[in-house]
Image 1 (cartoon, rainbow, N blue to C red):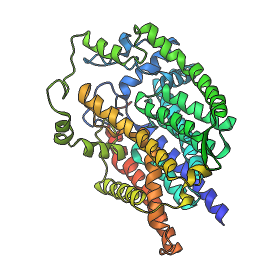
Image 2 (image 1 turned 90 degrees about the vertical axis):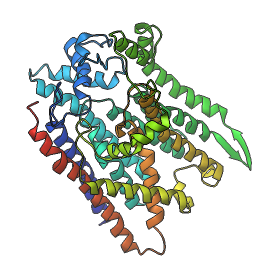
Image 3 (image 1 turned 30 degrees about the vertical axis):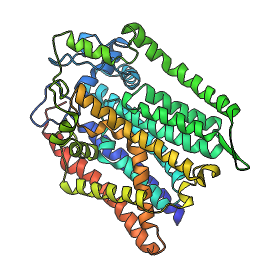
Image 4 (image 1 turned 60 degrees about the horizontal axis):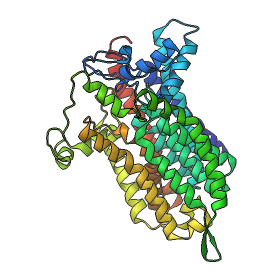
Length: 459
């Protein structure tokens, strides 16, 4: 009976993802001109020009090409990391051999991200099995990550966010798996793939790379007969192997940028200078003399971040029912409160090595690194919003979704899985949470977003 229920949950999990993701990918409009309903995904009309260029020319753009530029702002995404667009562009180039339909080319680019999201859903499931021995908590974790409406939305249109989110899940899974098997070849390979995808997808998740390095290095601090010793031999053996693979796979991008952009290996400074070369200057809070605190307070910055991190589709224009936001606020509040204030049990850290499990200092270090990984996208976004381009979009902080939902699920585990709470009531509470998470996604997609898409001009 338990095995049958597990298979049913697995089928529901992947079916719900595919149905919702395909609905969005096939119905979202793509328009160069913003129309009154504003249903087109954020900046997709500008981003899509990069894989379309790769499809048409078979080469990578430099960022200066006129056909990449959108509108009077002279904005182009050709200066950014290109791996997501490369995968989309060459997939489109293959499909272009069999069809002349522009619509099918767009769908091809979007389907690449749907596949990335599907892989992420599988990785999150595998990660959940390592983190939570209790099936109920594991499924809560998986549903929270995969079916947060904004998280799923990022896997349905052309952007680098989808690959970025997958990379963070892979890095954490590689680390947790490595803690269990002493960083076998497979665990090291998973970790390396995660770092590579992160480095070549989105800069605001680079904190995960540093966090992965710290957690990887901490593993080799051994406790032998009460004395701490560092295992330099295995650290160098495995660490240098991972580093060599990562550098081999990512160095081409930074070397290319260094050559093209006069030493600017990231390309962001070149992008800003390119915009200024047309006599355009960004008006920012910093340039206007507005303090950072004032920007955060007067614009309700964090409230906007919360809403847009939970469920806002279109060009930050399609909201859903208030009850969805209230539900997630309560879920997050109760989960984080439970994680912070309820007493931990040793079993909650079963994925850590024994020497980590029974030493508070190591657990604190693990939590500190996770908090750092969650905080870095937020810090980078606030800095960017203040000094470069005001943005209060939650999609920029979603690279921290996996550790955040880990703590949320852990908190609910501490609150619900108590001896005083009957097992039957625990099951009802977890089932209700899963049902509400799925319902919130379906409301966002089919009740709030789809009617707007149907009123939009033809793709």
